[in-house]
Image (tube, rainbow, N blue to C red; front, side):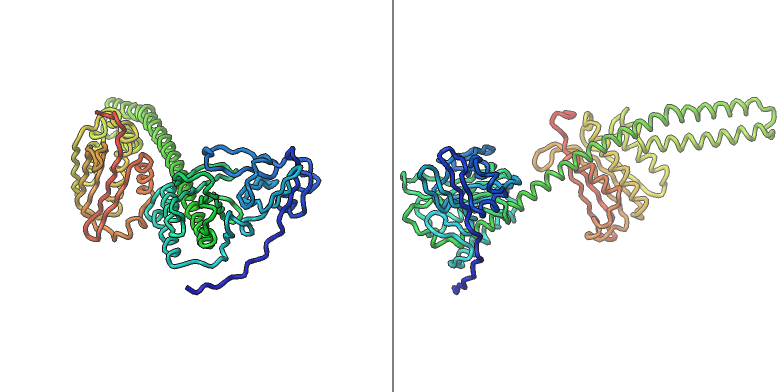
Length: 482
């Protein structure tokens, strides 16, 4: 394969520090001032821990981080973590270190650093077709939805499978948080003879931000780094993308879970407020209307003539009170069905269906329930009821249907878990499958939020001329109604 060399950009001058035996900074050059964000006068006399942190070693435990001291500084060519005045942590390599009464330390950015036995730089030649196949294979677990640890284990195994790697392979991938603390470690560490390995460390970077370290243990005599240098840098770039994607997905899942918990709480508050309003309508408005009807009837009974103005007025008052009473009770049923609290979900749905039949005598509505629905709890009961309520409303508004079927079941699902399912099907005009989600109204969106907030699933199915089907299945917590 023909390989073209690219011009390597000039690297900034290396930062240099002189540190005494007490780990105190005695002097530093201008490059060190720029690197760490401190003026020379402010850093002189400070401990080296102010600007340098130890790297996480292979034996580090997640969540631990210790500052370095002078004897802990890693040998020439190894990774340490610099700490900017702003608090930013970034990778550095010790490119030289001499010890007399203290140490003269030379620090460089990764692209200018030597890693272990050879120079590893993305501009190096040596990328083969096999390398490209491995880079593509690195993406496979992520595409299949694997967890980050699985992705990294797979990547490490691919890297160690290179024919240039020694027979006794060892390596690890370390993930760090923003403070340089180890958060995840994936390792392949077969036993190697003492003194027969040299750690090569390649930073996994997103811009200036250090995400982790790829550590490979190879014998001192190996030419692995010279042969695979450019490829390993490309691997590190690929790993950085996988890590950032996994962290973004994890953050999205966290926000989604937080949103669902918030929505579940809001739904609970809404239902409690509806219950309170229904109770007040029943106790205050309902009783007042009953009193008005009673008084109107008494006035009518005391009238000597049905043609008298008082009789006609009392009759009108009675009819108006009857109408308001019916409207009030319809509102109460919409806000909170009394049968749900008194008789359970099956009776509440039956009552709603019966009232719906009265209002829509030209549309048949069938309901059947299969299973034990006692003791399911408020959240499941009210969600099932709201699915039926909203779906029947949509049938009236949009379906142009002549028949609706409602089926309520409780049974184990394919995985054996207990769940309650409510299915509503009509024989209306239906819609194209691609319009199912595009045409969702606020009512259906609210139902989806309710169902998914309880860990359930909502499915919609329709075809033009074949009606509409909505199915909501809710998991039943262990011990409910059994």
